[in-house]
Length: 322
Ligand SMILES: Cc1cc2nc3c(=O)[nH]c(=O)nc-3n(C[C@H](O)[C@H](O)[C@H](O)COP(=O)(O)OP(=O)(O)OC[C@H]3O[C@@H](n4cnc5c(N)ncnc54)[C@H](O)[C@@H]3O)c2cc1C
Figure (cartoon, protein in one colour):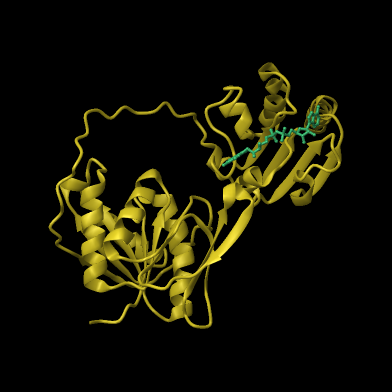
């Protein structure tokens, strides 16, 4: 049987696929093997060439109308078939809802191991993949390796940088695969109302925690965010317990990577930090000088947000006017 070789990347989410391509390129170069993207979809052939310019050596394309409804079985059978045929060494799968389900079922079929939501991926001296992930609700970090191949990991959005476009050559391989029929039936698909800006894409975020006493008080955070041209974020208790918002930043929420993250009245426990620690500059305002957020902040203000946030907004407004 052929030996395992090459690094594969798959996600139905294009941005995430590109982010994993960047990390995949690094892993493939270390292993001196090729990097391939698995492109599954309906009428998607024309998207293959550009992926080579983003770093892929090869793009395997399976173009089939069965992929249209995003049901798992056609994806699962395509990936199982390709992996059995070409025997990749590493498979990175985007950690979307679909990707998580797919990765678990794929690794069961391939009888191999899976590390979910790895935030660090490296190759050790024995050429094994070393994957690091957060465990125990964010209270620990586990570093894991594999006893079987392919070595499969899922990766959350915004974990890695997107690659730059390059002039390079590669190969597009169209593959015929007999796809399984879905075991579920889609009855209805309704679009979700989305805000104009997704928090994941915001360059500036002003985020509030339980230090904000009333929902109306978020107005002061919104004023600051608007002035900075940013977006307002929040911690999980404000969404889950107080029901003020539908989403939150953190381990179990949205992962963000803005240029500026202003943390107002939030403690900054590990579950929150896991979602924003990669922000370029972190400013934290908290009246407790022991607040954990100060450990990751670049600038700290030990004071009351009800004093500091409006004063900061006012000072910025004056500065921008002059
Ligand atoms: C499995 C699991 C997953 C989780 N996932 C997430 C997640 O993804 N994201 C997330 O955010 N949380 C998550 N949590 C919850 C998390 O553990 C914390 O409970 C939560 O982040 C705390 O929110 P907070 O900082 O708003 O509140 P608190 O921890 O209560 O902090 C409030 C802070 O505000 C300060 N403060 C109060 N009043 C003022 C004031 N007037 N001026 C200045 N400072 C003030 C206090 O000093 C304190 O530091 C998760 C928990 C579990 C168990």
